Length: 418
Image (cartoon, rainbow, N blue to C red):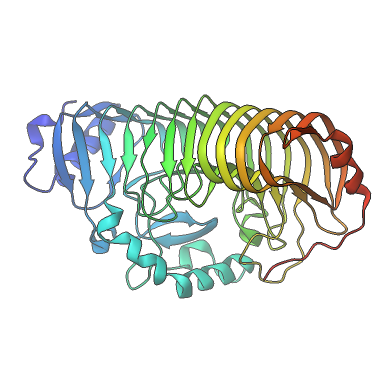
C-alpha cells in the first residue's frame, strides 16, 4: 500500500499514516510506503500486526513536541518499571510480524521540548521507583502518569511483540531511549543510524527480550549506545529476563554512557549474550556491567571479543556494583561466567580493568585473554572476585597476568555509594 496519495507534507500526516496502517492490517498486512518528503506527525503512530512501515530515501517523519499529542496513555516500561504513560512516538502492543524499514528518518525533535523534562522528572521517577519496589501494592494499569507528569516517552517501543525487523532507517532526536523492545521475541535491528540526541537517549535497549540480533548499526548517543536490560527491582523479579542476544559489526560513540553495557535495569536476569567485531570511538565506559543492591537478578554467560576502543574516560572493561540511585536494599546481583578476549584500547583516563563485587557475593569466573590497554591512568582494580583467569593481558605496555590475579584473594571492603 502506497501512502503517497493521502499524505500532505504541509499538514498533519498522522491521520493518513495511521489510517493506512489500519487498512493494511485489515487486508492481511503488507507495506505502508512513505515517499520522499518531510512530514509533520502530530502524535504517535501505532503499528499493527503484519505491517511494514517503509520510509523511502528522503522521507522524514518529524514528530510533534506537544506532550498532549501522545495521549491516551499506553502500557510501557519506563526505566524498567511498568506503568501507564504517554505513548512512545512509534508504538506496538502485542503485535507480530512488524517492521520499520527503508532509508528515511524518524525525528523526535527532542531538542525543541523534551530535554527540559530531565530537570522536572525526579518526583515522578521517585514515585514510580516506590511502586516498582512494592509491586503487589498497585498493579501496572493503575500506575498512572502522562498528563501533568514528566516521564518522557521513547522514540520507538515495542511491547510484547514477536518477529520484529527495524532496518536501514535513521533515528534522531529521541525524547528518551531510542529503540526499546520490551517482552519481545525474535527481533532484528540492522543497518540503523542513531544520531546523537540530548539526554538519556540510549540507542538500542532490548529489555526482557529473547532472540535478538543487532548488527551493522552506527550509534552516536549522549547516553549508552546499547544497553541490555531486564526490568528494575522487585517489579521485574517474576518477569522474563533477557537471553540469546547477538551484537556484531557495530560502531559506537557516547558522551556520558557506555559503548556496550548490561544494566542497570536487569532484575529479571540476563544470560547468553555475544558481542563481537565492534568499534568504540569514544565513551565513558567501553564495556560495562552495572547494577546496585536494589536490583537482585543475575548476569551470566556473556561473551565479548574483537572490540577496538579509541578512548574512554572511566574504564575499558568494568563491573559496577554500586551504581547510583541505590535505595538501601540488600538484593545483590549475581555475576558469573564472563568471557572477554581480543580487546584493544588506546587510552582510558581512569581505570583499565575494574572488577568490584560485593562482600558475600563476589563476581565469579571472569575469563580475560589478549587484552591490550595501551595507556590507562590506573591499570586495574579487583575487589571481591573469585576465579579471575587471565592470559596475555597488557596494561600500559606491561604484561600483567599475575598482578591482576593476585589481588582477587584480598578481603577489602567495597564501599556502596548512596
